[in-house]
Image 1: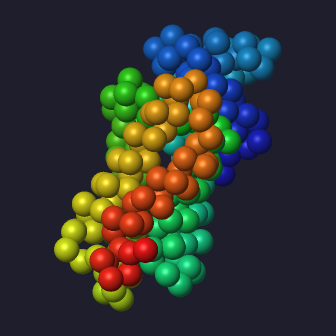
Image 2 (image 1 turned 90 degrees about the horizontal axis):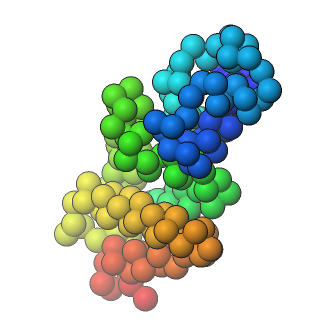
Length: 195
């Protein structure tokens, strides 16, 4: 469990990385954000990599909370929708977080990349099970693999977030996410129930 101060340091680091890029951010830059010495910062985190692990950990905790809550949604398609739209809303509230989590330089960092890979696999496992339930009950078409549908949903989300970033965050990500979901839903519903 992280302290409030560690969470503040992580958020400040996210903002710095979004602004300057991973390789340009130093522990001194992070300490300067809090007007503390490097030594004081090292009491909270031993390295920039440890802070990056905290970034991924906070995002994962939030995603896990959402995935646990969708387990109680009676409709499998609505459960996936809830997760998809929550990710849009989470990024809309914190543009710097989306910049960091989708940063190619950061994803090549061995420790952070591995943590993000594990998180994606956990998300995939949960969402694929939910999609298969939807296929079994006829709510989701069964002629496309659940794994491919997961890639379709998450790839569409990632591309939308990139488009939002390239617009200078001027488009309404939450609204665009809902519009995109409506289109995706039309693609995945069986022909007889698509409307």
